Image (cartoon, rainbow, N blue to C red; front, top):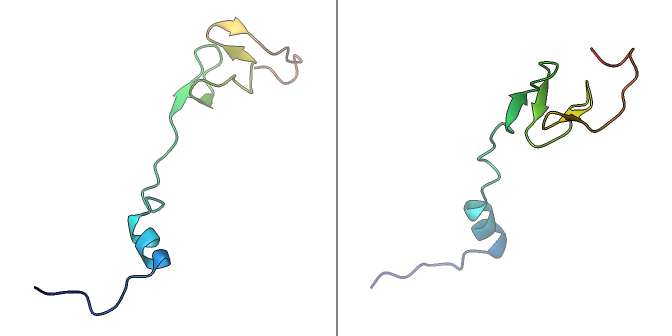
Length: 64
């Protein structure tokens, strides 16, 4: 049986097992109200709508 010569340190083991290097783009969708790109399941910062309902009151200058 072949055995490892040296112990693998915790840091080295955790670096190898980490999935930090597998970065993905967050789920971006277009707002159905104004067309801006928004993170999914979040209130649109441009118009204040979420799920077809106005959640935040926006000024006319800010809203499209």
